[in-house]
Image (cartoon, rainbow, N blue to C red; front, side):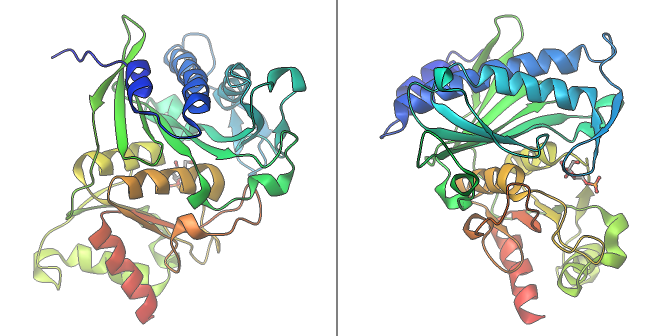
Amino acid sequence: MMQNTTITKFLAQHLQGEHAVALAAMLGDIIAACKQIAVAIDSGALVGNMGSLGSENIQGEVQKALDVITNDIFIECNQRSGYVAGMASEEMGNFIEIADKHKKNGQYLLLFDPLDGSSNVNVNISVGTIFSILKSPSKKPELADFLQPGSAQICAGYALYGTSTMLVLTTGNGVNGFTLDSESGEFYLTHPNMQLAEDTQEFAINMSNYRFWQAPVQRYIDECLQGDEGSRKKDFNMRWVASMVAEVHRILVRGGVFMYPSDNKSKSGKLRLMYEANPMSFIVEQAGGAATTGFQRILEVKPSGIHQRVPVMMGCKREVDRIIKYFQAK
Ligand code: P6P
């Protein structure tokens, strides 16, 4: 059944409060960027954009051509509304201040991972864009202005470039999902008021890191693997796509828990707080789930740097609460 609520109509009906006008304008630009990114990815192999550039980003990760292309698309599109005063991206060492002529309207900060899971792009597995919007204390933002806890976000969302292109977002009043109709170029409301299942029997973790995990993580996974013969008294399924956007989306739709804990290999974990963990935690909590580092609520972590990494365990609240209990019992 074809939906008839476009994302533009939905936002006009539902955005409220002091940021409503600014959010409508900024989300319009984000939607335009995600549509362009979807086209760039779709035609990637056809125009020779699937390769690596041989350069590394600030994370020390080899940059794909599409990492840079999508980063440039996001920057160009998100200067149009005049509300964004500064941007920070996984692909850029420092934040960028937007030129005065492009920020006549207001002062917000946009943080993003333009192509999360990009190592999957040349094997045709789903990838995504993650974004987070903060209020900026000034029109000339400094680094400290970006370093706000995730609880300060006014909007967060992701685009998932999968079997269909979707946009899922929250502004603090629940989570809603929209699917792109490639013929009309419109995003339509297809997943209203997304709510995480209370229970689950599915976990997502990169099992190859088992020997590096801390004891509470090994305990939780061991119990899942023991299935109905162990203390959980039910069998579990495992998934690992190596694309956080795809994992979190699956969890929003059918439940589960996603884990990228810190371990003896990466003491702070792998995922970045500001433009991966925080926006995804905001979405998961707004859908009734929970998100923890093992020691504290991710949204309460006081950032120390734009590219700071944190341990991430998020999803069904009952499972996350169990994991927290194991860290406390450690
Ligand atoms: P690994 C993608 O590079 C990413 O940042 C997340 O999207 C994903 O969940 C994780 O890293 C995958 O990491 O170590 O399994 O390749």
